[in-house]
Image (tube, rainbow, N blue to C red; front, side):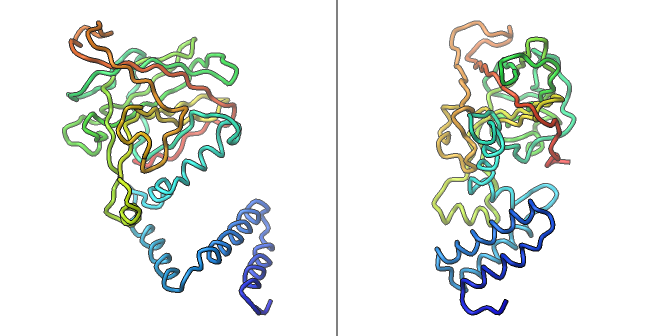
Length: 297
């Protein structure tokens, strides 16, 4: 097709994309081209702005390596990761879901821990937290034998591989649900933390006058054959950044009720001061059980 005007550019590209053999790839690329071209028209994108955008995308790739993914960080900081999560869970975006972002800190082979055990594996000052949780199917039946990975930041806002003061696998553990779909454990209350801002994502966030903090949360990954692997986070509702998460991950369903106990006997005899408790029930959808690729190898 010989191009005669700006609209024929889109038509010509769509014709070329239409020759794609894979029907799903053809559908995705056709939609992408239409929206990309319409975006340029709506924004009245200048040549200088286009060149800057290309340089920005290239820098995202250049800043990505085996231990850090700047592209995923950008996706989260634009709310795109959460949108994809919500579109693909909760009956394909129709109902509330406990599904959430994996984040960059999940590791394979967390220490197997008996239900009721502690995942504090080295001295970690902070208020004790006792978590009770249940895993059920969509109709409320308990799921026995589900593997549950837990990981979270310290009360200082560091995951263990970021902090030389913490032992390997500190604040990590793997549990198995009992006949009632139940598991419980002891840990310390996590803190929020900043995302890296020394790259292009940081430049974007500063240009928008936003802060770069995630609110405190616990991570969960629940695996059971016959069910879609559930990746979740339970957020601390009184965190100062709970309604302005830089990664837009906080959903109403994942506001955890972290209850502060004062002057009450704790579940462990060594606790003499304040402590917290958290109860939550996860519901898994039927589907394929598969593990994600661990960001940390």
